[in-house]
Amino acid sequence: MAVVGVGQTELGKGLPDTEFVLALRAIRAALDDCGIDPSEVDGLASYTMEPDREVEVGRNLGLGDITWFSQVGYGGGGGCATVLHAAAAIATGQCNVAVAWRSRKRADKASRVWAQSPEVLADYLQWSRPPGLLRPVDEIAMLMRRHMHEYGTTREQLAEVALAFRAHAQRNPGAAMHGRPLTLDAYLDARWISEPLCLFDNCLESDGAAAVVLVSAERARDLPQPPVLIHAGAQGLPRQHNLMAAYFSDDPLRDGPSSAAAPLLWSRADVGPADVKVAQLYDAFSPLVLFSLEGYGFCSRGESGGFVEGGALGPGGRLPTNTAGGSMSEAYLHGFNLITEGVRQVRGTASGQVADADVCLVTSGECVPTSALLLRSDS
Image (tube, rainbow, N blue to C red):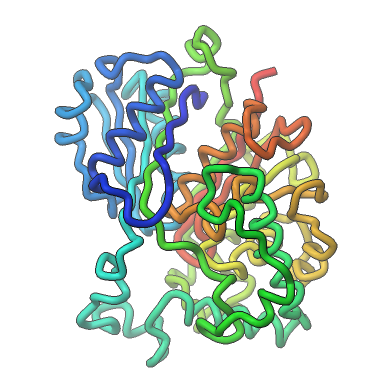
């Protein structure tokens, strides 16, 4: 299966369009990108958090008979899975042209779930969140502190993640942080959000939408854009069955969702970590990038701090990562813009193009039930 079309709206704060209109615009842009008429679309994949249901999307875009539709849960963990599900549906004959998308309007504080929850420790949350750690950033901060304690990881090493992604954003005119470079001194002087995580360790709260179109590899070769093959994909929910705050697992730094997804992903692939030329790693918070580097085998456990030193993830580094700026410097669309950037890199059309980027790893959220994709060129 192959991605043949990508679409993305402008990204930022206070966009005038509704979340629904942004979704329609992104999907239509993806269809225009590959020259497929909306009436040919017969498959839809989205997030359970996506409020724009199949009926409304189909009616407003003039889609054809929808013979397959699916939604994937867990927010940041679901992005790659929507594409994986769509590819599987095409492979099994459930549909022929599938669209996956994510739309968000989160720049307004009133729209943020964590600011509105009346009972933040209700139902299953009471078993997995120690009292007082009410926001995702608090939970990740605890895991990062553990990483620092166990392995000696430093704030300067963590800063390498934020600095690399901000540097990539300077090459992407559409990034929210384009024209706003970041220095190490500015990073170290920034206010705490949840110690040891400062302002620049957090993703942006953004408005915007992105979408992709998938068809069979055979049909893809007759369309205008270079096909980007879905080489392998996997989902992961480890047997400890925790969400983010995996403090009761045997080792919260080893038992994350990538411990289930990564071995399966690589077992389905003809390539390994050493073959990945460019990566798009889920970055709602900078520690998740360190955890993913370890979880997907780019370095051993505890060695990610050293791995990222010297600009390894930035332009010209040994593993250019989040090359449009990612969730921390382009926009936060629950990671879906990592997928669109991965496609552009493999196509060879990215604003910050990496040379010979024929294999790209894209991951969804570490520390939640997750998913991942390996994208490859068709040449």
